[in-house]
Image (cartoon, rainbow, N blue to C red; front, side):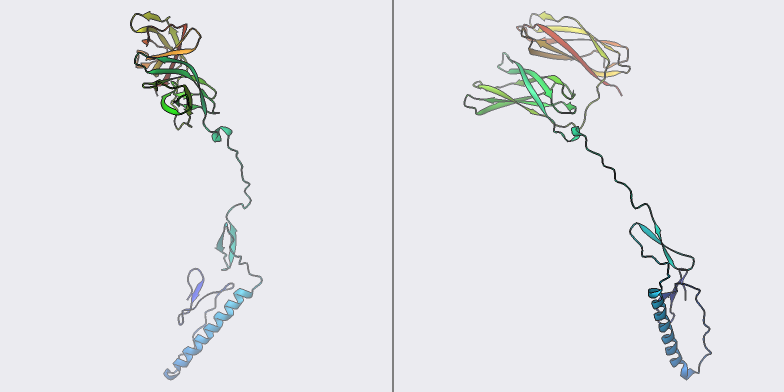
Length: 301
């Protein structure tokens, strides 16, 4: 009995075989034997079929002209029209590899340096530390932490304080102002060392370009310190939000010595629009040589 795939099964013993070439021949059964001889006829038929199976197996193994090919990796096996097997290649075997080097900025560590400018002590004995954070990484950093470590005259660590850069986005090789407030500094410290905790950012907020400042000269206030005011003009070509104006104050030695910030009056500043700002830089007893204004904002969408 032959299946559609050409596989034959003996109806007596269950042996399965396949003919590699040619068309199977149907042999008519012999005339029915007398009842007493049927058993011996069955045995003879089995012997004939078994012998035929052995001959077919030998034919498969010994035929040199057969088109059967052992399947290889990356190939498929299909049956030919005459029942033999052929190998079909599934795809090209010699695809050339492509080597792509990693950009240096992707493997370089995040790094930065803090440079002290001035120290200011408040009426409550809190210590304000003003300086600049320098991004020495070959890529942009986000807001970064600066740690102030206090030591006594024997070099023993006796306290610390920390703060963050004022900028949320710090380009490679950029220097940005940083302020550290230590509310309870050790009174007997001999020196202060600074450590930078720079990390590769997982997220950087988008910043808008095209914001222009128009600032008035700050005025001294009798009790509060210095009052400042001005306008922000949006010439970016898109609406802006979180428009922040920062004021840096510099002492007579042109050292960074004061800081304040405020926001433009409009919640969202449309393209081509203008918004006012005003604020106070505390410290009525401080003498400043000049002020520097900086503005930043983010896209609305």
